[in-house]
Image 1 (cartoon, one colour):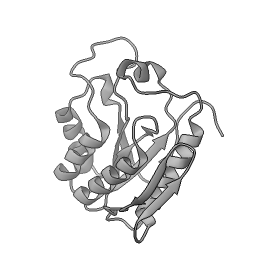
Image 2 (cartoon, rainbow, N blue to C red):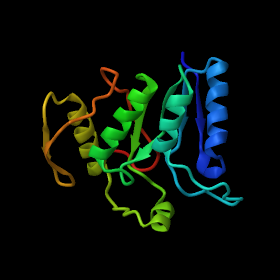
Image 3 (cartoon, rainbow, N blue to C red):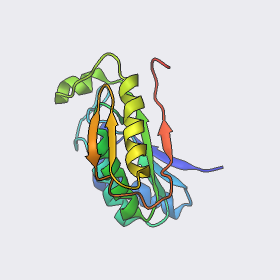
Image 4 (cartoon, rainbow, N blue to C red):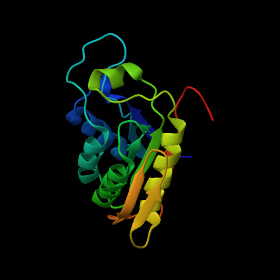
Length: 179
């Protein structure tokens, strides 16, 4: 059995708070540190210190921890272009020495999308399916990678960098409609 920490820093946690939490978890023997990938506080309360970006934060934590696994629960497909996300995750994996996990979901918090001008299409499962295909395709390709889908098109993408791990664990999850 593995024991992991989970935090929702959009509710009011700075990078320093998250670092302290992750390092304490590592010292106490926890196996992983996962954080939500949200930019807007949910519910009432003080919004300070403000949002932190999940993958930027995980990059910092990758350099300031040594054993604990790091990831998102979950990154919304609406926030991240899949080829860029593949690079970000591979980079954090390298920075951590192979300790990253990628959580992906379709996204659900429409008010957050509206607040930050992020498109929120009514149907997102196809985006998730294509994003998974693009990310894993880029990581697995031995040369360049091309993809022609309904939402994403890549032509001879370099398919670099590669993750340090042979296979990055991918967690697909979230609440709401299911398929």
